[in-house]
Image (cartoon, rainbow, N blue to C red; front, side, top):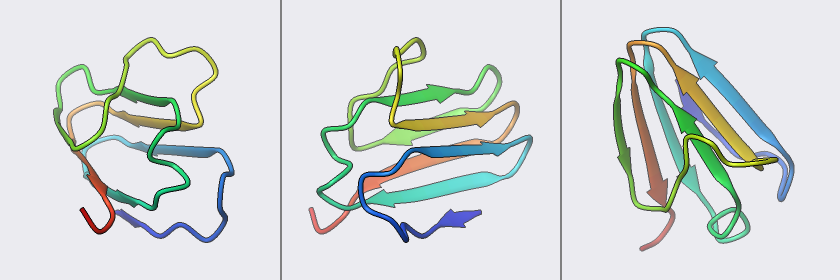
Length: 74
């Protein structure tokens, strides 16, 4: 699952049981609260994230899958 940002600054809530989630964030989201929950999965991220963030703007969840969060135009 590759996520394309169609709205700027809106809440993103993305879930996948066992697939790949790849998210490239534009500067609007790069300072946003990011919550990732992957109890058995693999996470790769260019940005700071938390498992317990309060009121996250971006919420990514997977059980056994892989999550990649990349910064746009590094």
